[in-house]
Image 1: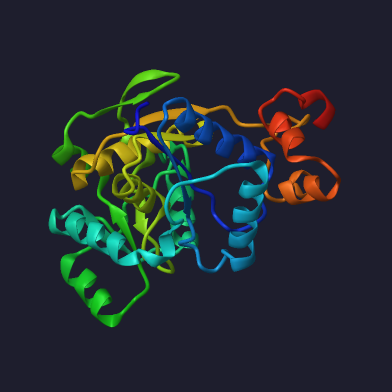
Image 2: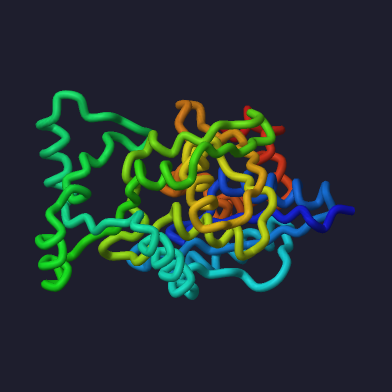
Length: 287
């Protein structure tokens, strides 16, 4: 038994869980069980404008119905904003953050005006408008209370961290390439943190040693490895699993209401049937 193996399932309570979520939760739970380790549950609820208490409760109910159990209390990110603020403070002390006052429209217009805007996994890179802003103008805008996000100065961050690597259980050792994202946002103007920052900090604080998640987040691990190095956080192993897709080849989404666990249960499916469907042993019937 290897109690040092700790996995987690970390949904956002912005809708009901669907079949793809079930697969991800079962995958993570199974990896912990196989190693005799720990399986944790975390609610990634930093977006208070979209998260709902009824979805939080429904997630707990659906996972219990599937037969999953987890250790300890459920960590809710919204209750730990001070922790993320401290991480931002540490990055600010290293001169790695800068305020970005640009609106989405302004960013889009500047990108459109560029003949060769670099692109990354999330689309075109931020053009760096506010990175080179005159320090006095920046101070005046901050003193005035102008809304802004906080961006990571990617070039400086990579310079300080050096060459980094991380490992995926399926695809092996990787050289971290966080530059493919450009200057990522680490705190939004309406939310005082970001997915990249909060998930990286939480995995460290919860002692997660094996991060299991879908292949759609594979590239994000480059940024997370950089943040681990900058904040002196533990480096976990990653296992990016396949995504469940429908007959149209598109991944499941919360808008696919017919395949939410709640809808399947109400349609008479048993927990065992849904587990089988999620794990891919009954795909022809369900798709």
